[in-house]
Image (cartoon, rainbow, N blue to C red; front, side):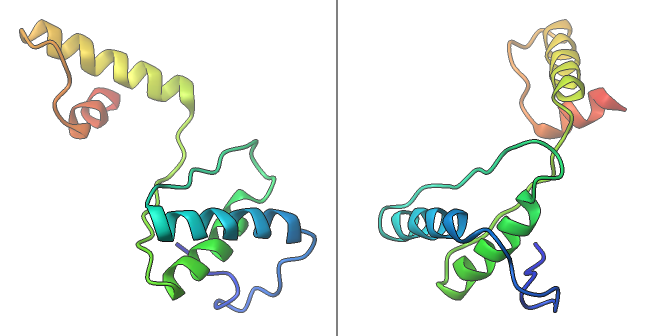
Length: 105
């Protein structure tokens, strides 16, 4: 993930409260484990906030894993298609993410 402050994008402005919240969540993850999921409407700055908090996490030695967003309706259709394909093959579940990706193709 892009670490904005290290990429020379400039300081994060107007997000002090959000950064305090995210940093506090990192404190909990660091001491007790867990995960952070950030969601919201497109264009509100999620990627920039995550870039900032991921830099802090990496500095602390916390593993940072990322995933790309997907339109929920497309995801639901792909998952339904994959499950239908699994059932048609005599299985009760999808066994790999690649089956869902293949259902979208």
